[in-house]
Length: 116
Length: 226
Image (tube, rainbow over all chains, first blue to last red; front, side, top):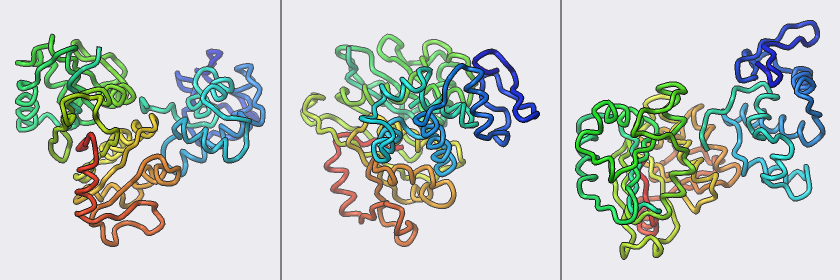
């Protein structure tokens, strides 16, 4: 179910099923429109920094088979000038419930499992 | 209070591994706080087996047995581990590791013990060496070995990972891509001993010979044989 307790979304007339933790049951259902609808349901505005984070976490997961460490995100944010003085505090401002976990959810990825 | 002793247990619950663990624990004296036993990866199966037998001869007042929350959940689901086990993170392991006077590692590839030179943790250098000497039996084992390294990387510890022998298999094939994030982002130093042509030139892995590997071991304050 999503943050608002919904078990599914409807995007472009397609029913998208969500798991109990709000992540897509089928990652193949993901699109940016799906991410936007999830965020809309949660009352979250996906601004440029949040989109950058979602895309970065998705790309990292595809390339390395797992989401990035917070340290890696901050390093990449600094390199790409996404925000001024990136830090874990800034990341938590973007997604207070956990920046990597939430970027995974909006990015159509499974809930991260490592306790790092 | 900080523990004087930490054991990282990653070996499966075979009789030989269990005997080695119990023998090491019998010789451990605790001064300020209970010693910490941290079971990670296949070591969680050892913890499960020991917990089933009430930890046998292990005095629960002297030891705090913890399991890696992720490794435990992979094997036994989301329920909390049974007492006296407690779920903890890899961050907890590395935070406590830095303060211990004796560190034992019961890895998949053997056992090793590290003592602070004069018995005090304050005089330890901070260099941590993770040694990988056995091939991953499956993807889960490969992933859980990588997670130990990522735990050290997350805390920005001064650490290196040394692969040798059958452990070089971790860096081969599709499964190696997880390790690649460590070199691509400069998180830790990754070294391969006597790897020959088994390491891609653009992998960022540093090739070392046995002599240099020996120097790395000598310079390390703590060696964890994974």
